[in-house]
Image (tube, rainbow, N blue to C red; front, side, top):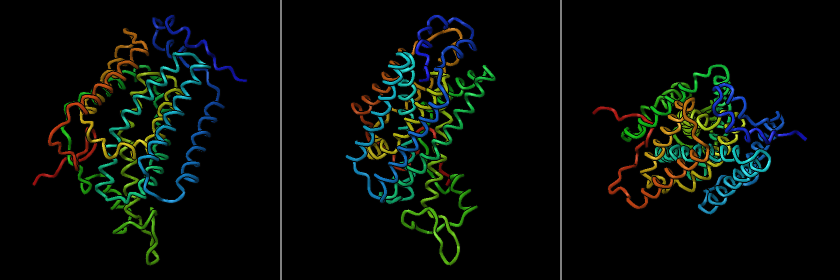
Length: 350
């Protein structure tokens, strides 16, 4: 049996005052390559089970089904955290939960944009799960590459952490002060690029991304929507990946917390799609969380913020922003066609 090195996190207080690069080395979980292979195999098995068994035929995902799958994904994440608690101790378990919570909360902003894309292109309800499945599969690959790149950069260039921190602070401030923009697909660069490269059918062709008509292969609007969903996740990954590195530099914890959040995105979408616009204060809560994590990264050489405090800040900000949105609903809220905080194109001048 491979030893996970449970006592790595027992020395946290002792190494906090040490130089930056030494702290990064000492606060890593001693993971074996087989843990990575096992986790990835588990993810692939769950995805195969999802598409090959439970969602073999296109159907409209009900609120009950979405609630069940949301509970499954959250339960699996908590079970994983429990395993970390048993084999590694409280510090990595709390670190994982903090990262998972940040990624899951940021995904709500992602959901808002996906709702607008589906509305704009009138995606049939029974095909939305198919788009999200393949979109999230692509997101898993992109996130894995981004995390690998981020970990490599941090290992080679210590100052990159300050670039990540500054990026998060700027993004958080910008998210808080930026007004919602119009989602104009006709001016969207992804839509323009796809239409320039691929011939498109005028309407959907069932669940298919491609169709052959008159001996010629065409892309369907469903493929265009899929590429927009992928582009949306790419934009949000620019914020979310640095944010998780602000909590931990352990590649295994960064990867697993990110992947668990992405896996739960589909069910969370169907659960929250009809009510997500009610949480109008969440935008400011996410902005505060990003700013907090960015400031933590910029100041961590001089100020150590315990993971328990970080988790408390994230939970507190999310709870206040969600509760505030429900207690003080914004009257006359014009949200249809708006992009939310960080995505979209400004309307053309008349």
